[in-house]
Image 1 (cartoon, helix red, strand yellow):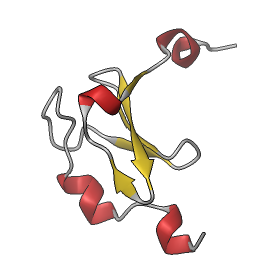
Image 2 (cartoon, one colour; image 1 turned 90 degrees about the horizontal axis):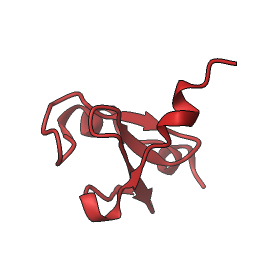
Image 3 (tube, rainbow, N blue to C red; image 1 turned 120 degrees about the horizontal axis):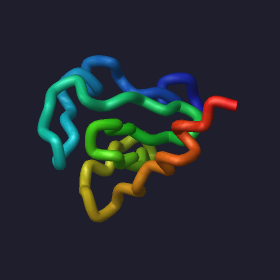
Length: 71
């Protein structure tokens, strides 16, 4: 995997929006999980072969209990 394919273009991240909340800048790139995360919608969209799959039906719900753990 090349360095270019390992990440997401920052300009693309600026223009993509969560289809559920439709708010610009609402997505966070999670490099480890290869997902775009929408905290507002509680969803994580997969990135497959460098392509963000921005379909609600393909998104996974965020594990809110795990995210709130502060141990």
